[in-house]
Length: 135
Image (cartoon, rainbow, N blue to C red):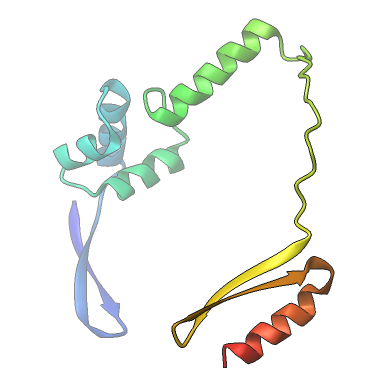
């Protein structure tokens, strides 16, 4: 591990660390061998979790024990059980159409509640009217 400095546009130089490839590989392997989270492994090695996450991603290591990997594994198991090309029909019943026929605007102007119903077909004129009212 070596300490290097980098100039910043807003002030004095701030130090940052560069880690050797051997150290990176060691931490990634520690993560792969453990059942701990990325955060726990990173803290144990004195680095930030987002840095370890980037190293894992850059190395192309599959997450074999995280939530993403578990969900992916469950999907693969389901697909393998049913076959990748199996079609499962689903019956969908048509329900009543619930499209709105009017726009309802409720305002409180000077302590007086005002409700306005505007036809949906004239939504652009409703928007223009509302802009004028709210000025």
